[in-house]
Length: 187
Image (cartoon, rainbow, N blue to C red; front, side, top):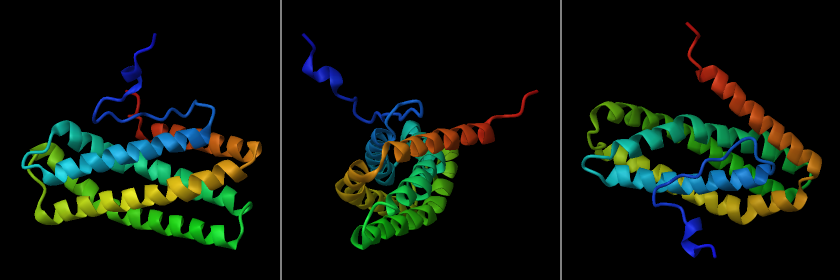
């Protein structure tokens, strides 16, 4: 008999979404779980006198690579595909999601820079950096509430099999392009 706790994730572990999986909306759900984990990580860094290196590196990697990819998946693909299936009321909600994503992209830069410096020193964040991290975590949480409550159900109820195939193909291509861009040149 399977132990009930065997499915529980360890505290602080971040599930990884794999581009080879079949259901792109399930992958977006996994991305949303990772956002929740990173919010907790940002809160720990903001509250620490000497942040854990693993927290600094996890938050930096997420903000520099994973979050921008996720936002592009949603802005360039999911929202675009959904617009052809929804009415004006839902279109307004899609506009709110896009605006929230733009604000997130603006907020990432200063925090990513602070985390890059902290990777070297592990110094506590400044008061301003703490405030920015806390604000970003709040923005991410508020965005996930809207997306989980409205966007994802709308996507599950309206996207066709063809739409899902397009969403998946673009997600995979985006990650392949990102890997190529970050690969060190052969020597």
